[in-house]
Amino acid sequence: MPVPPKARASLLMYFVYILQSLKSGRRYTGYTNNLERRLAEHNAGRTRSLFKYRPLEIIYTEEYNTLNEARSRERQIKSYRSGEAFKKLLNL
Image (cartoon, rainbow, N blue to C red; front, side, top):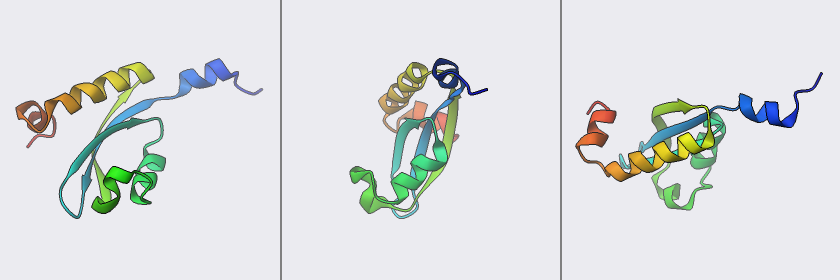
């Protein structure tokens, strides 16, 4: 029996991720419900701001049950700006 749309949505997990450019070392933070697809999109040049920094690799991920949790965490990580909290998050 097919899974109803509401139940299917509750099966999704959301990920907050940090990418790093293998070319320049620049880092990018985002969120998605499909890490492999999103990394492929970034590396295919579908994100304008990262086009010239390709190739990219995932260096950090966190998993969340809801989109709101993932969005909130992404904003929090972006607010760190490369400061001490960001370095601690990445164990730098």
